[in-house]
Image 1 (tube, helix red, strand yellow):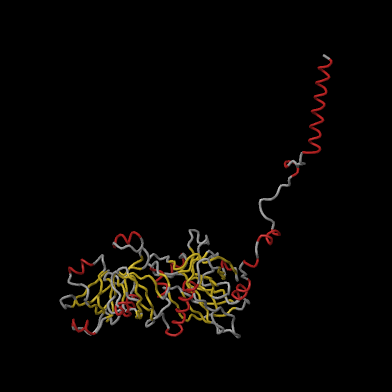
Image 2 (cartoon, rainbow, N blue to C red):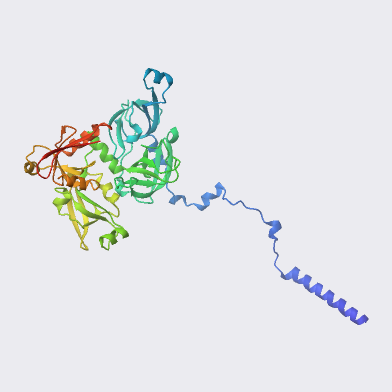
Length: 467
């Protein structure tokens, strides 16, 4: 028994000795994480960022910002608005007029004090003033405005030459390019925000009448009319709109491209109004559904459904079924690509179109014409007449109906009125051109009847009254 106990003790001691030697001499020393590890924050301290960012590859906005803030101004617009009627107003039969102040931004575009802004910033202004970045305030004169593009031109008289921003070619701006928005949001003067160009040729109207540059630079109320510049400090666009359910910035902002803005203000300065060059087609953008409906294989481009008589497109030989793929080497994938480029053109300018016709590509030069068509309420599309049109019906003036309003086409045809008929007067005013028609309709009171005198298909004079 003693031998057995002695053997067990010796074995136990041998095991303890062996294990101790292994721990001391052979096993690696490991720290216990639970007790020795430091708790690190989930974010990186600011001091460590320089180790992670290659500063040589990041954009430097400082120069562009410094140059632009001095050329962006604060625009103040005083309008008279009718407030809520008081008892005294009701008793004396009057309506109180109260001054209402609106603010926005503007961009100085030359040393003489010409300033570009949005039409909606200065609309209905009784008084206009401009405050520069040096806090000097000047009265401003409205030179002209264009509601369609939402661009207006102001002028101030300063003692010295003013800092200004030069125009960039917005056609060369690229999606993904860095841009700065400079303006006065919420009356916070000289505010600079940065973002990228998110998209081009954006149309918010749904009627392919707009062609905005979309950015994710923060733009808020008060930024309207301010500058969108590239990293060189050159003007890429005029900040104009945001889309938001709250009225404040949520990630999308839109600017009128600089090429369009520049063309509009040059027209205002030279002609007093905007000169629009018209291609002379009707159609729409292609997609899978439209292509299937038309039984064609192409899903990109603008499909020509009809060509306006005597237009530049007509004279250049464009045809129904042609698909416009490019204009002046700019890809056309939607209608706003086309209208956006044309908005920067004037009558008699020449554009080069790449067309797909029967599956073959061809290039055609088209001379843009002055707008001679207009869509008239109730009637449809009208255009200026030629001498042969007037001679046919034995009249001395008028405009020709070239397409009837779809909703009222049956009514007109049942009364002997069709395409080719001549409208001679509207509201007792003789009309000789589309411009005359537009002027009469613009001056017409909301409650005034629409009186139309025309020559029907039988050459008979008829009068119509619409309320």
